[in-house]
Image (cartoon, rainbow, N blue to C red; front, side):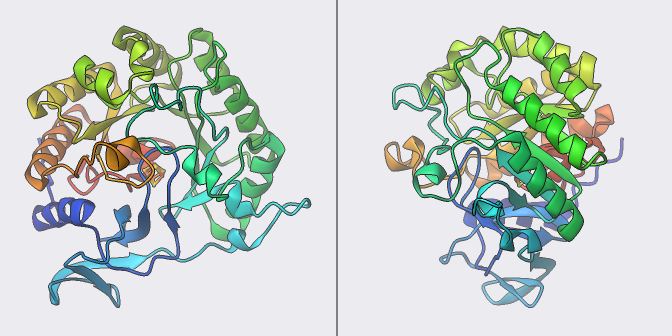
Length: 358
Ligand code: SF4
């Protein structure tokens, strides 16, 4: 087995994921579904979404990463603002409110920016999906035509290579997947070669997974965030009512339909889980053909974890250990994020796994 942990690069990648960097990043996110409040850069040529923190000892200067003023020997450069951000639809909606550039080559959107689980008693404690709506940074529902229009422009003007589409969870049995499928069809009609990943909760009717594939999606993320039921109940009171076995059934069906290593899930580090149990959970996923996308919990304004619970980022040593062990398991299984056709694992920006070779 070849283990390319990339030595110091991995340690530094983990360190900046926790401590952030000082950089002027034209491509950035505030609020929204999943990790945010970050700047998008190339770290050693790899797409990376790193917290921007004016108190960090790391500074990006002229393509170099400095630590306390000393050159680390590592290259970091901000991603440039894409040309499609300057456009708007015929009714005046800025393209930037419909879909955003993630990393350097990924177009990302949340097709429905509301979630049935957003009441405080139900909400995932790390999520701020409706905050970007409240701030006016996006719109509640994106139509298939709107998204296709933006995808075509981003493909043509900025050379995006893949697209990620997520959704807040809806009330229906499909948990939002039907609207996702309509959006995928519209995008594929406009840009046939664009690879698309869809992200949703396990649909009650597993046929929905085939529907998403037939619409044209080629990777799928079904995100559990933790394989520990105690952690799930505390951090995701609403979502934890979907039993883990329902996730397992959806992952198995997704691997059958989309193929091995075209299915992924997030695993968050820093929610109080046991690291050995987290790695064991990741191994179970890998054995199923599912890529565990290991991402640190990040304190983000507008989330319950930050505003109410004051949960800090995880210790660097824990994130380093878990990332290294999971990347070794991925390498042993021959599963690399970059082999996914689209999606977060293919992008890699929110995780240090790709720096570790996973
Ligand atoms: S890993 Fe996923 S959420 Fe993170 S920047 Fe890439 S596409 Fe966006």
